Length: 174
Image 1 (tube, helix red, strand yellow):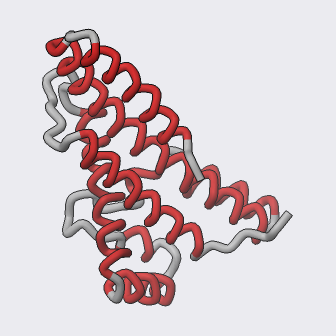
Image 2 (cartoon, one colour):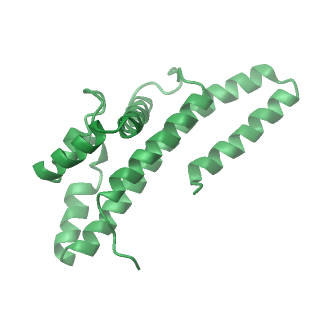
């Protein structure tokens, strides 16, 4: 299923192709470099919004309204980047531990047992870490070293990890 990130990528690629077709190579290079920054920011923001909205829905479906409000207001709101160790070992142990040691042990074992889950976890964390750097460093001076194709692949892989995590919090069918 296509996401807003896929639509963003499609629109920006059309502009990039237009610039190249018109022979505006220097403008195309500048546009691509700036778009890579935007793309990283958009991916990280998308992952954050998707995960937090999903967890909020899970809390509302599975807890008393007062308890779910507490979870949303104190555990989720403006806490996303504290939930992960973005650079330390590139794993989600800290996030999984927030839901108890049994959950952490189960999910970490499942990730370790699958090369696909391990790769998607690393891509999810790499995009989040790079978004954090872009947001808090000198955005104008920062260069994203990956190509657009590599970033797109990381996004698709990271999205698979997001969906994997969401599957660990089943929602009621409405």
